[in-house]
Structure formats: C-alpha cells, structure tokens
Length: 246
Image 1: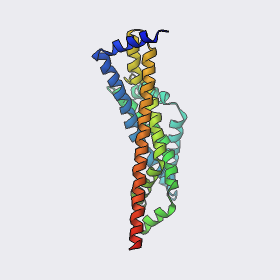
Image 2: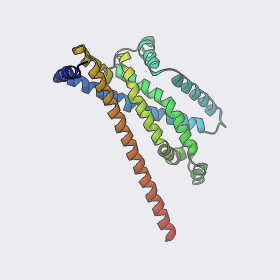
Image 3: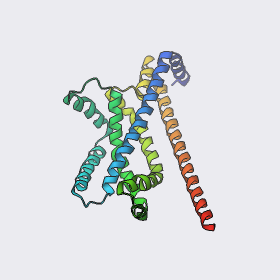
Image 4: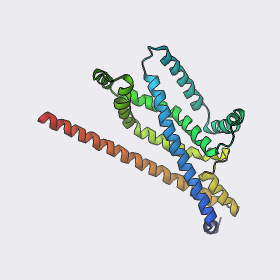
C-alpha cells in the first residue's frame, strides 16, 4: 500500500477550485444542519419538558402530556435515517409538497429528532432545580409560565449544558446520513472527491479527522460556556456576601 501515491492523488485533486468548493459546501451544510437542528431541538424539547413537568390538574395538560409521550416514543424509537427517508420520500409526495430543498427537510427532521432527546434532557434539568425556586417565583406574583421562563429554565439549561453539548456532537456525527436524501454534506463531498481518482482511502481519513476536529471544537465551546457560568455564579455569591456584610 503506497500511502505517498494515495496522498499525492488526493492533494492533486484538491488543487482544483471545483473540489475545494465541494468540500467547503459539504462542511458548511453539515454544520448548518447540526446547528439549526439543535436550535429547533432545544425549542421543541423545552416545550415538551415544560408540559411533562407541569401539574396535571387540567384536562388539556394531561392530553398534551400524552401527545408529547407519543412524540418522544416515535422519534426515539426510529433511526434518524428512517425518519429522513419517510419525510422526504413518503410524507412530502403524499402531501403533494413540491420544490422543497432537501437540506430544509434535513434541518427539520434533525430538529424534531433532537427535540425528543432534548425533552428528556431538559425534563431532568427542570427537575434538578430546587422546588423552592418555583414557590419563590409564585410568591412574588409571577405566573407559572413566567416563573418557568425567567427563573427555572435558565437554571436548568446551565445544569444540562454538558449534556446538550453531547447532543450537538451526536447531531454532527449523524449528518453523515443526509446523503440518503441528496443533501450535499461532508460525507458526500469527500466521497465525490475520492471518486475522481477512484481512491477513497485518504478522503475518508480526512473526513474522520474533520469530524474529530469539529467534536473537539464543540467540547471546547461547552467548557468555555461552563467556565463563564461558573464565574457568573461566583460573582453572584460574592455580591451576596458583600450585601450581607454591609
């Protein structure tokens, strides 16, 4: 196995602006789907988690709770690739929806899939917040929803930040299945580059390295956010001590 020849073929292929653009486009699409999918997932997951932890006194809340449970069961019980195929090749034709960009479908499906997982993550985060926080908010005259948005959810997000980072990493790695619905992602780009000289070994190694770099960057970002929150908490504690001392 002549590695130098294989590497030379890859580098010679990458000298072309066309293949450089392919790689950049694939990388951007991979990051775009993962980032937007996570944002949608956080929104959906937060709403579901709030419903799951809400008191079940009212009928509408109990109905919503059952709907959320079914939603979570469906999206956690089926593989991402199956959800993509059903959405793109079954749901859209059935509803006669045309001219929808496949990357939009990918973003929506990734977001809905992530929402099911974030819902359980967020539910654990909400439950980890001291119940006295809710009681304090209600005692101040805030409604249940306002207390959740302004007091409980921010604390929950801080508690589950590392787990959200893991979810982001999972989405980044799962973008490799986007090629099933013709999205030009990182996998498709490097596979196309490898097909130029019928040599895919080096392109696939480069693909693995790019994914590793992306994961390391996400890990670093999460640690930075954790440090920022930790410093903020220390400053708040310091200010409280100063106030008490006065």
